[in-house]
Image (tube, rainbow over all chains, first blue to last red; front, side):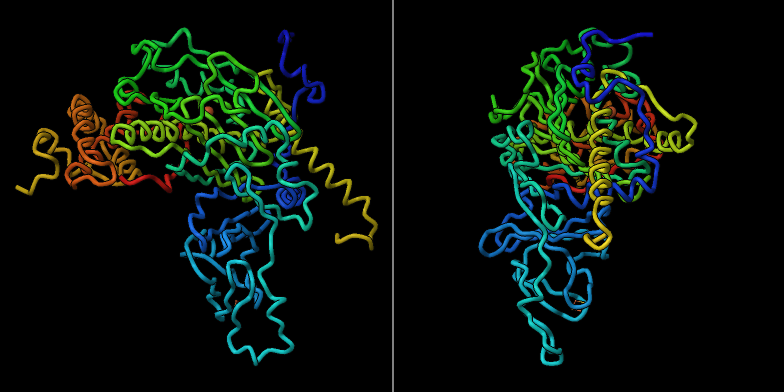
Length: 423
Length: 111
Ligand code: FES
Ligand SMILES: [Fe+2]
């Protein structure tokens, strides 16, 4: 029997140290609860303000676990609003490109339904009904698009599908995440976006980015070329922190440009870039509040996991990564990843960013490559419980947070009288 | 012979231009996976020693306003970056342990 001394996990007694069941990732019934308890009640990040560059800009976002699609608009008054992407006439999906399952973006004065031509302003108001005089007691002023709660924080656009969210976005994000408010995300507008359809529960992929325990075995090649592994390589995280359902982990690393080049791949040295990003950092994002909250030495990356399905990784080299995980069923999900940099001014900067973006995909494919195997292993139900190490504390915290939200929802549902609630 | 695709100073890379001057990551990725390791090695060995000069050449122009031949040269450099993982890291065209996973790049700067 072993027990780690001075463990992170034992500093969070509410998490316990016992083995964990991953039934929450294989049960269709739990998934249905999760959709209602979490995705219809939590604040969900659907994009960035940069995706609405002008008055009249709009984009749509699919939220499969809520069976919802939302339109986010920037009105002629400059305000950001969100609506259900549903025509008030006969329910057709209002805005789409290609097929109704594809997301759309653009600039428009009005949004026109493809079916019978009803039109809506970017403020949601119904502006035009074709052959209006053929309808009975029709009041256009009551037929605007159905609004969805929408707010922005640090340029991230969030929606909440609850009729009345119990917390404002700021309250919801709490002090640990909220402290990042002044980070210069708005300077980092050069975006490399990725999308994957994965064959596992959404939480299984999030788990892979919440611990570094898997890095040496799975990403062996990341340790350096051939057998020349850097003895300084350090994969145990420097700091863990939780705040309500949100959590973060800091990793430390010696700066890449200080590592002897024999421990690096030749192209890392040539392009001056690697797994911590381009070596030559832009002159932004120095000493921003909220970053490196544990005051770790050799701070390299903060990975904030914002409940339920957003992850923001802030790199010491002045760029950030954002991930979103959208469940599409109990055993499938869509992953979205965004690397965002201060725009390259030169070909050399462009190449360094490209190296980081290529590296991201190469190693993320290794992470994603494990997913269907884990899902199959869990679904075999050969094991009822699984042990988690101290380095996997955030996996523990994440699944507990999901369980807590589902339990709270169940309690509310069960205490509602049969005729007293909507259920 | 077809008109050269690259600036005259990079005539030595011209044999690789038709294959590797590709505007998007999706095209570069597909090209890597349908190439043999010998082809990847040959491209890597020819282009790696020239990459620094190529970038310096491209940087004689504004990034968003390059002549076509310089932009193709930059595309060749971006292909080298992708191929370097096959040559230096995996020693095969494919990512090791990719399994059935697939990740698409859906947005990127141009060039
Ligand atoms: S459903 Fe939109 S106009 Fe009829
Ligand atoms: Fe990983």
